[in-house]
Amino acid sequence: MVFKNVYTAPGGVGDLSDIQAGTPTDGDWLDGQVPIDALMAAVDAIDAMNEEIEVNRELISGLAGSPPLTLSGLTLEEYDISKVTGRLCSGGGNNFIDYSPGDEVDVVHLTDTDFNLLTPAYTIYIDSWEYNNPGTLIVKIDGVELSETLDLSTLTPVDEGAPFTDAFSTPSGLIQVKQLEKYNTIYVRGEIQINLSTAIAEWQVGENEVQLILRKA
Amino acid sequence: MADYESAKTKYFSKLVSSTPSVSVVGFAQHTLVSSKYLSGVRYYSIGDVFTLNATLLEIFNKVYKQYPMSVNGSQVGLNDFNVAFDDANVSGPGSPPVDGDSFVYSKQVTLDRNNIYHINGKVGVTPSDPFGNGSQVLSPLANQLFNTYGQRSDRITDYFTDEVFRLPDNDGSSYPSNYNSVPSPFSGVWDSSQSLLLYSDTEGLFFNSSFLPCNYNFMTGYYPSQSNADYSSLIFPQPFVRVAYHSGVPHGNGTLQLSGLTYSDIQAAGNTKVEIKFPGVTGWLDLGKEYDGGTFTGVDGDGCHDGSRDIGLDGFGWTGGGNFTSSSGWLVVVRITHKNISANPITFFKMLGGSPSWE
Image 1: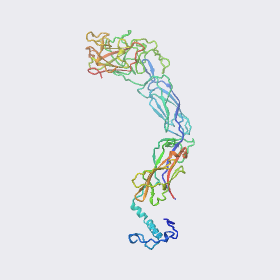
Image 2: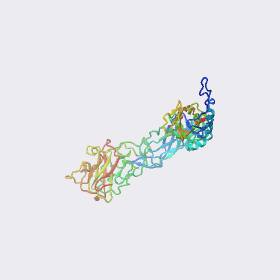
Image 3: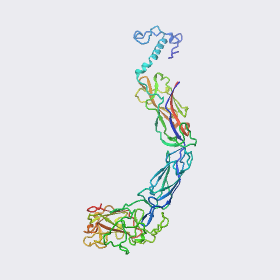
Image 4: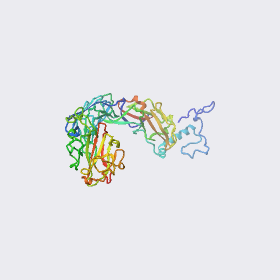
């Protein structure tokens, strides 16, 4: 926690290390968990509280309930994807990663206007203790991260169960936040849609792999 | 830094649209096995062998389908079937196929689909890729005649695709046959392989699932080729005779349905004449003439039409004027005569109605 230079006045105090915690309005500090007294520097009192919270964080999390699923290993759901079953020719510039010519696989035609992947509802997990730095959503196609990303710290989650009226898209519509809400007091969860039809240029003729990544600094 | 990565979702993508097509379809006689005739005209039928050729394009474009070719044989008596990319009768594709490979199909196929009649049958070939079908292409016009029906006619019904209930000239004279006695047998006596010219006064043509007036020469331009079906010299009138039979049930009236005709067609000024006879009991009673109980004696030319028994526009009610089939071998003989080339084809014959019912 950083409070440097919160208050600077000519001839006055420099920061919270220059003032005492003082006596709270209920009369003393003894009714709390953190050992603070009136003569402690204010900055130390705050530091003591911050450390206490960190020590008890897992306990607090347990009381709050389970977190939602994270993106890790999550299978993205298809939405408006029109795919067919076909066999693969060799040659013709076809890209192969795991498949082989002759295999029968799902085939998509990328000129289709709708081609979306979706996280299951309420699964993307953000720890609210870190919500000041919740992370950045990134789409990766064939191992290459696309330049259009979404910093989730620019969005404000709604209360649990409230409609998310602030649905947000990146400029091309590649990443769309359909839902972002608080969950079990200390978590944030959401639903993210990737509109792959905006990224046709990134696709290769042949086999392609798509991933959604939440990267926390 | 920590990354939370979803599982990989994999797709095989095709960026450029293409539509498969058919450039060539051929369907030619290979071996004539059957001996199917109708009114002396020969037809292809079950067991005959044809060579089916097809060249398909754009079948292997980045991706392909397990069965990229489908065959529709509904006009030629061939059961529909699909052709796999690696069918032994397909040449062109590698293993596995390479983008741009050709697809050429050629196979001897045997007619195996029953209940098809078509006088200009064509086979259809449809190409497809994983994204859909191309347009069906039909084999060229070849005047190929197909008839894979067995017997459809019965004691009261005729579809004009077989001649099992057809009766020949019975008196060796010029028109009309008399049928003054009950014909026995009254089915299975017509030889469909014989020229109509042999049946001197019952020489109406069954063709195109109908009984129609005729002056065609089927010896040229129609396939399979035959040598006895030059009907350009057929003269009118052109009759067709058969019975309506109901064993053990006496009928004195009924309704004769003749699809394709209206009542004006069978009246005196019409192009077709329809007569009913109780053999051994009455003469030829005219269905195009109103029954008159005051003058009716049952001789040739007496009217027998009973409008109260008409059904729709092509069901013509009749009465026997007090005569019953119990006195005529449980049957009536029906003679339908096209008077000239302008007569309308009849596509369905059925004796129905009556009290009791013929059905």
